[in-house]
Length: 428
Image 1 (cartoon, helix red, strand yellow):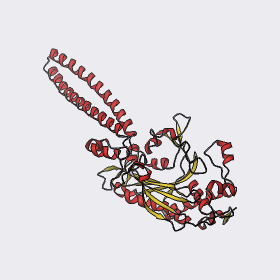
Image 2 (cartoon, one colour):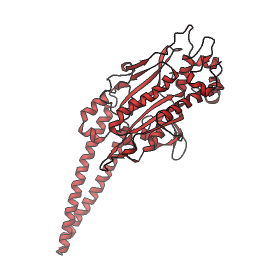
Image 3 (cartoon, helix red, strand yellow):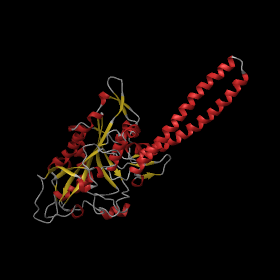
Image 4 (cartoon, rainbow, N blue to C red):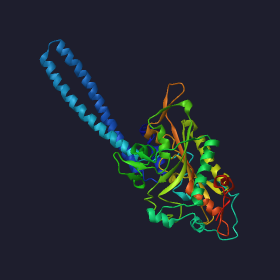
């Protein structure tokens, strides 16, 4: 959530920032400015009435002391009118405050100053590429769907029978490979990168979804469970991990806090009809290892680079070619101020595919969650900064391994770093 005080003092900067995202949020910003103006006007009127009420109360006391009953009665009548006027104003203030809060919940974060300007994915900037492991195939490589079904570790027909389209069933060495990838990621992030592993609930409340920005904006993409109050299946472990600090006041010396979790993730993909319907790329249920940082404001940009490096390390260990993109203003996620995407090379498709988005949300989520920290000197309480990234998406890593490690006979060589988990060096 944007700071209304910032918007009041920096209207043109807010307009420019949201305009760089494509402009569709500018009408909502203007409504925020209009509503805030009305709120402040009525607040000024209310404060004047309260001041007048205090003056009238003093007069009533003075008249009563002087035994001027008629004068006291007249002033008391005025006091009652002021009381009713204040009540009416306060009801209007409460309504405007709710309206303003709802409007702010629907407006995205402002891009950081260093984010490149652009209208969409075509304007994203490649900042790094590691092609050292890029193979020259002596045969035409297949996509992961064909490779996986060929060696009998993926069964999409069975998944469709059980659940419908956009689901996957992994069996035998496929299930073991999924588990091995997850174990590699968790071991690396906890034992080498210093993250605390969490196993969170997969169902969260509306407050948690609102805190990280999934509600109210993206409700159509969420799976909602019939309960009272309603619960939602998590679209990413970012939601429970980040909400650990919701409503808390942390100590400065406890920061940064770094969490990782392996969870199933659930997304309706309501806005992606017809996109990536084949294979593991865009399913309704998938596994992901998430990374979350909670930091001081002055540390968050450096923390983003560290988080990104932690995610890259997995691809380096697997020796899968990848590149890093800095997203332009028009392609940023709702809560992000700056994002780096990691993309893996998929030779079966002859293209790069996103496998992680590493984002600094600055204080955007913290304001929604009321997540703060107290400076060590005890004099100041501030909002924390929150960061998140996939470390990595397990299903897409699975797909990248199948495509990059496939052999001409249809088998798949197991990456060296996974063999201690797999117990085999080849699938098929």
